[in-house]
Structures are given as structure tokens and as C-alpha cells.
Length: 521
Image (cartoon, rainbow, N blue to C red; front, side):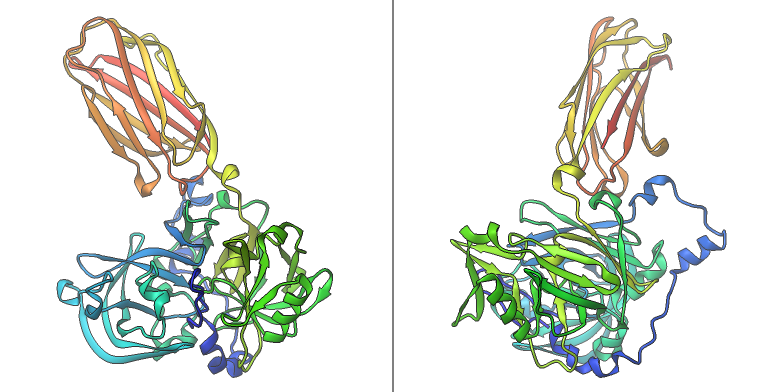
């Protein structure tokens, strides 16, 4: 569990403490493939296939925030009405907990008396973390993750001394476990189990941000092809406990230093962690120096570009690599090497934490019992595109736009794209309506109608964007006329071809305008 923190970086190791308790039984656990209820209905022809937008990644998703590239957290809500918290979504544990009333002074805390769906339980809940205890009591309530609501048993925490300063100074309120029920304290069904039947497929995927300046993405029910390059490469699980996979080797400078053939992929662990002797051999090969007081290894940041590449070969021969810049973290003039020793486990293994997941888009496939990896797309490759606007007047409209300007024409997600249209009006307009049709890949995604005279703000569904419309100034006399809109697409909006068509009618139901804006992202 949470085992260690650096005074600057607040590092987390979430899975290690409980590994010793389950390791002896891991080899006896069968690996079974499973579909969600929605996937089974779709396979049986009971559900139609969704438009292409869903195929390329339009499953619900949650922004993942970074704190010093050490804590990665996202929101979820508990109760009715919803009480929102920041959680570490942790593939290295299986329980959900949130702070209770005791933390009213310095944390968002769960107020069960304010929830109409709260059900008292009261069973004592204890987890022993590497640095001390975390405890509280069980409660039951509805939990909402990005629009999916389901009943959940979870813990209200009263004692977090096991997390120390890493919790009190950190950005997260609680932990939401995404591992298997076999390691869940008190046998409680993990949240993912309870939401699974609402998903298209029993899958979730991570894209972790590489800095605090941009958000990543956690997606349930599928994966986002816009956020990685190449094809996903899968490794089958070894056991249904942690997300554990076979590992063939770890090398640096062509020299093997791995003493174990097992690894877990753990979103709740900031670093790489493995047997102490393995870590020592790795550090010796790259020339890192240990700081005795804190027990961590550092190199000069001036030497990072010349560090050798770290090679990790997983089951089936899949090789993942990290450069020196990718396995170190700047801490002033010195750079922390993002690996630590961990011993005392019945089955020695390596924990492949956020250091690896920041480089590789990672898909956790519960149905097929496997993990998929693909190199994450860079910011420039997944956010940029082009835009243009045209007047679609076929001669039956009273406004002819002769000057349409899109700025900028080289567009980016998260940045507004502005259209300014100037032209001439042939008939007075005292009132009217406009109609908006947003298409993605040729399929209508969203329609909206509003007042043509005045401004309007339109929120697109599923959080994929906002359109601000600058309408006509009415009454509008024949002559010069202007109209405009501004569109902003967030980073989670799927890439592809968008068409935004706006048409209008005046007080006599006469067609007034027709404009199309085409974006390719």
C-alpha cells in the first residue's frame, strides 16, 4: 500500500503490502474471459452498433490531474445529491474509501447525513499500510463515476496516519481501487465490478499526463485511439488478483538485472519498484548515487541525456523502453531515479507504476484478462487540426456571406476557434430562429435551436465542447450584416471530422442564412 513519500515528490506505492498475503494462492486462480452485459446483448443482436464516433473512443472519460508527476487523481461522487471527491484510481488495490467527518477541517469529506441514499453499515474497516494503519467503518451509498451511478459499499475513514504528510499535503481525498475482488478487504465488490454492466465492454484505460500543465484521461468501457500511436500490444494476465503479468527480463546497457519473472501494472504507484538487489544493480549500471538519509538514488540532471535506455520485456516478447529522461524526475540540480527497492514479498516481483504508464497508453481489459500497451501520443499529434468555413446559400437565403474568416486556421483542442462572417441582408429581420447541427464522421451528433437575434452558448453532449454564437442584431435592416461563432473542443474530444451547420429563418419563416464550418482534428 502507500509505503513511502519523498519530501518533494510524495511518491506512492500502493500494492506492495498486500502482495505477500495473496502470493501463495495466485497460481491456483483460473483466468476467465468475461463480457459485460451490454457486450453480450450487442453480440446477440439486441443492441445496434454505435456510430463510428463511439468506435474511435467516445466512451465516457474523466480528466486525470497530475501533482508533481507523483499523484494522479480524478473525480468521482458519492451520495444523493452528489458529493464530489478527488481519488487516486488505483489498479494496485480493490477498495474504495473517502474521508469521514473527522476531516471537516482540511479535506473534502463525506457527509452521510446529507445523502438520501445512504445506508448505515458500521462494520470496522482496517487496512495496514507500509507506514502505518488506515481505518474507519463501512457505509453504503450510491457512487457516480462520469455519469454511471451504482450502489457501493465503501469505507468512511477516520484514521489516515499510515499515509502521513503525503495525504495531508496531497491533492487527493481518497483511493478508488481498480484491482480484482480477490484482494478486496472484507471481500467487498470493487467499484468497477458494480459499474461493469453499464459499460459497452469491461475495459478501462489510462493516459497519464506528463506534466502538471495538462490533464490526462481515464476512460471506462473502451479506449481512445486518439491518445496513442500504432497498435495496442496485449499481455495476458497471470492471476486475477492485482493486474499481474509475466515479465521476461529487464536490461540496461544490454545487461540483465531482473531476478524475477513477474510484474504488476499499478496506477497507484508513482515509481518502478522491485527487489532491492535488482534495483542496486540497475543503479550501479547507470552510475546513480544513493542518498543515505532518504534512501533514494539520484543522478545529476546534466547527465540525464547520456543515461542508457532501460528495456523491460514482458510476456510474449513485448519490449517497452524508457529513456533516461523518462525514468528520472528533476529535483533541483539533481534528478531522482524513479525506482526503489521493495522486499519481503512471498513472490518477488516488479511494480510497473506511473513512470511506465506516463509513456505508454495502458488498457486494462477485464473481459479478456489482459493488459494492452501502446506508446502514448504526444501533445502535438493529438491536439492539432485544421478548420474552414463556407456559405452554403443555394440562392434561397436572404443573407449572402461574402467574407468568412476562421481564426486560427491551424486549430488546437482546448483553444477557441472563431468564425467571423460578413455579408449583405436582402430583407429586414425583426425576429427569427436558428438551427444548429453538429456532425462527427458524417453522423449527426447534436442538434439545437435558439433565438437568431442575440447571443447564445451551447454545451455539446458528453463534455466534448462548447459553441458560443454571436447572433444578429435585431431589427436588422437590409444592407451589411455580421454573424459569428466560437468553438472550443477539450482534449478529451475524439479526433476526426466535424461539421457544424447553422441555418436560420426570420419572422416570416423565410430562410435567412446557411453556414458550414468543417474541422479536421
